[in-house]
Image (cartoon, rainbow, N blue to C red; front, side, top):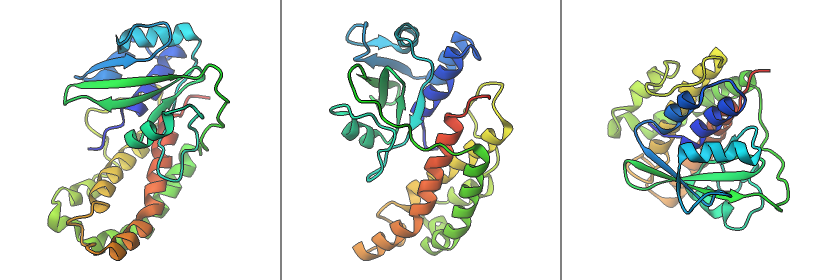
Amino acid sequence: MHDFPAGRLAVWATAWLGGRASYDAALDAITGDAAHRVTGLPGTGAAVPLGEALTALRGLGERRLRLVLPAPGDVRGLPAVPGLAPLGLEAGQVAVGERVVLVPEPIGPEVLQWTAFPLDGAPAAPPAVEGTLRAASGALDLAMGDAARTLADLDLARWHPEVPALLADLGRPVRGVALPDDTDPLALSLLARGMRLAAVLDLALADAPGGAVTHRQAAARDEALRPLSTAVREALTAVCNWIPR
């Protein structure tokens, strides 16, 4: 299953900074079984554990973090900080605050490193457009319906036997993924659908063996699935950036 550590950080750091979750609950939900270390955070050493980084974020005056899922041609929500865009595009996910931006990078199977980009003196970036949970859910359903024929034509199930189960269980909660207790139930359902469809897209957009062999066929496949990819990104962003009103 596609992993979104920047989404977990956005959700749980925001909940802790806002007093909606305990420090221990937030730290456990973000890290899981991996060791997390943060480099480049103002006021810290070369590399610090994530728990120390959370405390530093509060000291910096952060009030919330937002998930941004940059993609080629769409880096909305990323501040104009030297070196951030290439690293963010490579990771495909970043957590953006008012004081700092954090980009995850797996270092082996059990270590996740976060690179911090301080925002002091950087021009403020307009936040990425965030729809409501209901709007994101409707857009995802519509995009999935439009993409169904393309997915069927790719015959993914022949090469990837896990695909039918992913599609059949779209609404079922994702095992091992926790959200704060006060999360809207619609967000839980939308997260499950978004994560499973993200996994399907990873398989469908692979150059092989997904049925698209030539460059022209691959381009047509990518174009056909782009609306679904966009809807998945917007759904996951809406979930991870949701806070109670």
